Length: 245
Image (cartoon, rainbow, N blue to C red; front, side, top):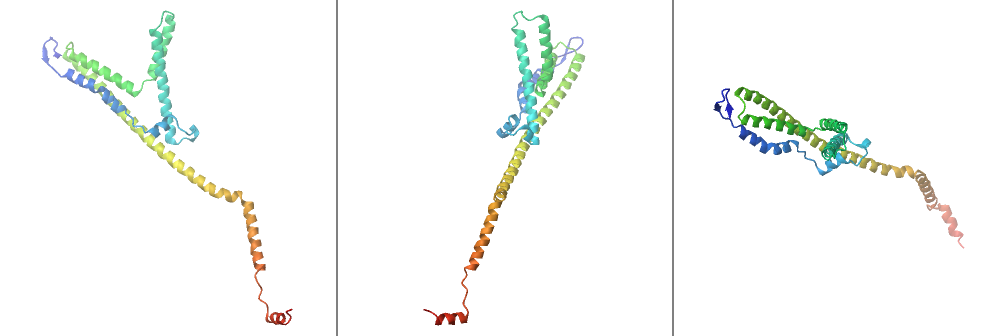
């Protein structure tokens, strides 16, 4: 309900309906924007590549870097939970200085561990709060105009983050496909090199045997020449005829 400066109702706007629509759709929107389609093979490449770091393909190396960054963020979030539990369950053993140190550490970790999805949730929360404030009926028309500008600002930020999350998800999907292609090409090249090596190695290793075989063939050829029957001449035939025992 819009309220004039005099406090009279001037018009109504469907703020509550809009806010409710955003509230109901927030989770699907965030989930859709952040969704990453990861094949089982690509997930293995991203989380635990079989090859050592030095043998990773370009796409595998980038996926590993992304996975490492996510692991660091998760470690920070886990530490935040530990601090929250420590502060909540304090039985008086923590001094004010202890609490201050823990709180500073928490604030630092929280700032360093914010993901685009975390920022998106924050903007949605701020936007929803302002929409509730407008619907409460306690603001003047001028106030509502100012709040409306803030809502528009948050809406632009939300759309920008959603685009960024979607683009990053698509980029990661492309890297996963590229990593599989690169690894496949590398495996083919390795197999070809192995096949070529296996064909060439026996020749190199058995060089002595090859030479021996060649000598043996030459010897056999010579022996074959020696064993060829020699046709006798006419005189030899005549002589043999009259001198047979």
